[in-house]
Length: 349
Image (cartoon, rainbow, N blue to C red; front, side, top):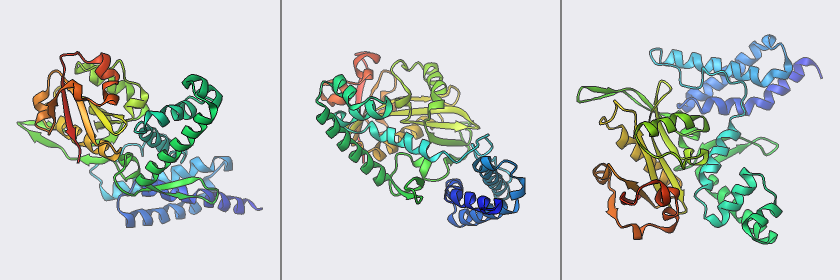
């Protein structure tokens, strides 16, 4: 095989990922298709600039990223390039990471019967024998629960997205099928809201997106600054947080903690100085949308300072005795919030 044949074969191997990479960053389908063709032409025109064939994937990424940056500068010269395009990333290995985060979000909505064995197997890497010993079950029972749990998780993912596969059966792209728990990741560019002014104070343009592992310190700092508890938060819980950002800075967040078919709304916080501008209310709306996308029927919360705020958003005060067992067993109900906290509930549409 000649070097030319090797180059063309390598480009064809990554062609699907190239198109998917462009489509997820350009909301207009026609523009995305045109830009994908433009990227492919640039790839072949610039082939002589590839010095090391072993680095073909990262080189293709740089070509695609450059074409996207040029596209946004042509279309919207007065606006900044979307976050992430100017970052120093070097491969297309992002699909697995996105699907992994989404699977972990959906995993938290499974009944404990299936969720716990799956977490031990997939997240902690325990063998069937180790899981059986940990849960005091027979190995056949563990195998059955793992099998059923994986089917339930797969069905939730398929209800969310339609997947495209390469000839080897590997996922190379995905498209939102309906309401989707990874909407800001697989549903196109991150939602953006323009600047607004309330009572003479300005709320800057905002990007809303789901939480990621690297957001942990910023989220925890914001919550502590608002006097909210953080001691029971971990990386899995932070994945189900909605965040509001401006120029990369975290300005607000709200979390959903699934417990089977219901969930806990928690950690609604806004950066001091921006409170009273409607950001908190918008975060609650987006957290409720996430809860619906995760298949939750209702949200519960505990509050010591803001019952009026939540009442205006459809939450009604209720007695602790009515709290579902899963939510009642959460660390927020058991230990984190004081017994004097007000319990509120909202049935989701």
